[in-house]
Amino acid sequence: MQGVEAWRLGHRGELDGVRALAVVAVLLGHAGLPGVPRVHVYGVTLFFVLSGFLITSLLLEEAAEHGRIRLGAFYLRRAYRLFPALLVFIAALLAGSRLLGLFDAEEVSRGSRNALLYIVNYARIDGQPMGPLEHLWSLSVEEHFYLVWPAVVVAAFALLGAQARPWLVVLAGVGLGASTAFGLSLLGQAIYVRTENSTETRASGIILGCLLALYMHDREHRPLPARWGAAISLGAIAALGVLSTERWMGPIAQYPVEVASVALLGALVLAPSVVNDVLRWAPLRRIGRLSYAIYLWHVPVYLLVGGQLRTLSLLETVVACAITWCIAEVSMAVVERPFLERRRRIGRTAVERRAPVPVA
Image (cartoon, rainbow, N blue to C red; front, side, top):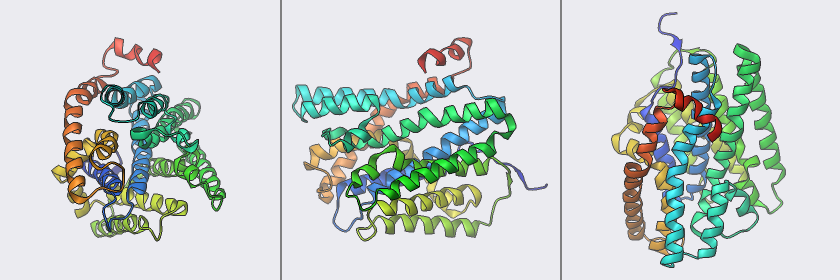
């Protein structure tokens, strides 16, 4: 049909802008400026939904283009993206705590072990103090997703071929229901730390992102009117801000925030509008590309500048954000970009095709 074609993700600059929104929310929320909502809590939720959407889209496109998904290559690409910056971050904190006394050495050592094992979220539930590494709980949740969902997608395509998508939708729906039901069952039990940190309760946002990707890749799509996209996108962004205020704060607000995040992504890809153009603004895209390093480094910088989170003045926040930006730029140039270049070449040579198996 004219004007209708199979949907592909491709490179979308507006999604870098979405990453920027999420990480800026985290920076503002952790600063604790007067009158600013605790948007950091749900900036992470936006990251979760976006991760589910992007990873599932990449897996489905690889299956459509090559007829199979190389799981080992996927894990190697993830390792190239995540491990180098994380290892440098941990090494710097260990050196700073042991040699310079910047942080409690025992807390940093404990947090480093948990971070490398990707169990920071459960260590937080267990009450283990980890100082400047406690924010890595969200990376643990995402890593659990990376370990499980791609293997499920690969197995589904290997067993069912072209019929895999409907079954993946069913599996994702069951997972979404189980995660939501488990989270709601914990309400009123004074264990908010568990609902906020555990993979079981936070998986719902990631799975919603997966379901959006499965919907987008399951059929051909005609772009919807731009005015719809603008209205839905702006409404979703406004909802994210409102739901982050003290009045709405709490475990129950997680679920409408996840829905608002999916609505934002869906509007951006189904009904491109002026909001897409704004999110492609070069400074926002740059922040989005640096978001991983910014997220890693902002907590220790905040602690050094302001003493503790959510107590920074406006001047301290500006200084801390500037320092974090500079560190993120260095991290991208010296640590991340060389490995990102290697990641792009995975699978182009026989050696690289063999490499993912032992690494995974």
